[in-house]
Amino acid sequence: MKRRVILDTSILLLLYEGVKVFDDIEEVLEAHPECVVPRHVINELEKLADSRRVHKRKAARLALDAVTRRCRIVDVRDAENTDDAIIKLALSDADAIVATADNELRRRLRELGKPNIYYRRSRHGLMLEF
Figure 1: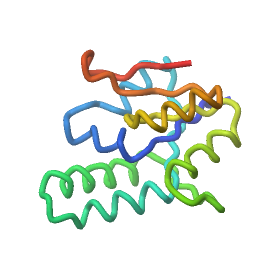
Figure 2 (figure 1 turned 180 degrees about the vertical axis):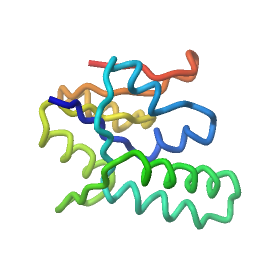
Figure 3 (figure 1 turned 90 degrees about the vertical axis):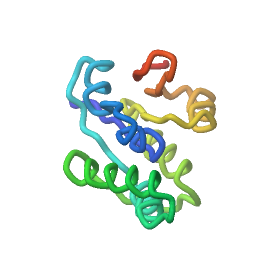
Figure 4 (figure 1 turned 60 degrees about the vertical axis):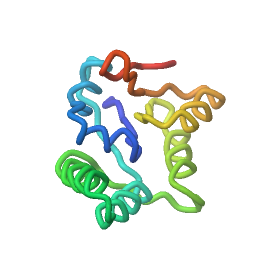
């Protein structure tokens, strides 16, 4: 069975900073997972892609380009916000892992007993947390 990784906005924006998100995920998992992105994340990236702030706009456009080439986009019904959509999707698949750079989302995932891949700035790379 192929492992599924659910990516959030924060981890995708790291692409602009030179973090090799997809390669690092494969390295951490020692596998080539299916990458999944909720439509909520696409909506956030599209808003950022229209930002007046050049850095955010470029980062979001790079992330959108990567997602369209490398990920499956899924609709999540009855989720009030992006984090809820990610958690709902993660809970629907016992083997799914969420990749995020958002500390609040990581906290919620830990409380639910869900593993996550997160960015550790001091190591300039991704780490797996169970």
